[in-house]
Length: 180
Image 1: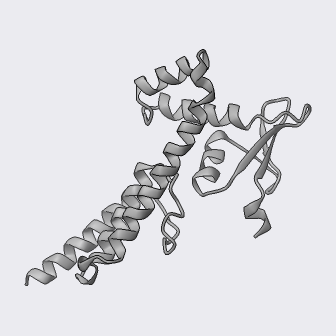
Image 2: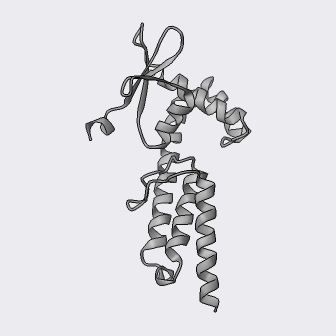
Image 3: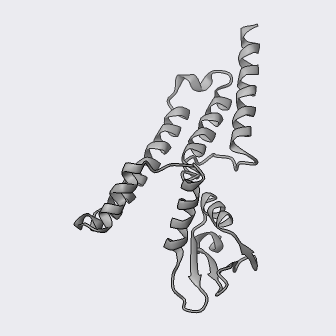
């Protein structure tokens, strides 16, 4: 359990290669993004100087996703972020963004909780499949950022889209059985 509490240490060598100190192998930015989506905290340090490079690499991961068309941040938001670096708003922006993401996490958590508790539909056949589909949808929409929002969430295996398709097929099958 101690490993989950401590950030995963990634060392950057002079050759700019990234080394995972837990598994003793080299990793890519996509590997680091996967660790983060799985809920791990990551710290990236320069081997020679000891400088913390985590922020720089996280921004690089975001930039790569945005450049591949996986746009999450609207141009207006990006423009405002650039402006905030040259204005007095720079001191307020980090706290605002953090509070916004916390509200998003809480809202998603409450939505999932409301979906399962105090819901008359919970006794309906196929509801569990529908709830699992909703959880997969929320996770896909938030890029895994909200993992852990549901305490009984099962670890995902495979592709989110294929999981959603499987759950939808299961739900359709149950509904067709109900209609007979």
